[in-house]
Image (cartoon, rainbow over all chains, first blue to last red; front, top):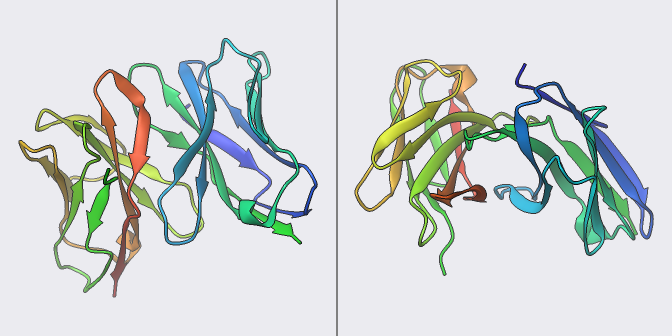
Length: 112
Length: 113
């Protein structure tokens, strides 16, 4: 099954708080898990990505946690800022295909 | 360094018509993928072009076709437009051997009336 399920659909966080977005997958052939950020009127932009042989990756305020046995991965945004308000998509790539399978998206609003 | 350029930005077409969308990949990129993003949804993979050939295809009908030119630019053609084809069409480019380094354009907003 080539599907990625994302939750929550929307999220409101206070400035300085932690935003957490979760994704789950079924296909064990996925071998790359990127997160994209999309602002209105723009295309998705790569935020951070992880491979399944790594349990955590951190880049600045953004961290991916990966649980291979549970087939789940999550994005944590520390010290959330109003400028982080956007739609976030998790995605997965089946090995050797180069085809991105996107989750349904999470609209994040960070209140000042 | 120009990123991915898509044209036009917006387009309104009538049901049953045909449409052509265009994409110029990022400099140094030779692979182009097209995605359809319905309102409030994640992008859905349509197809991917490399060396002027369709390398992969998603679950889209034959009404959706494409082309890649020798300069790596690409076109997406949709025939017999349906109301349900209204969406943001995104082009993403990458470099062979670095399949996971996608750069997306800002998309073409297609409205079918």
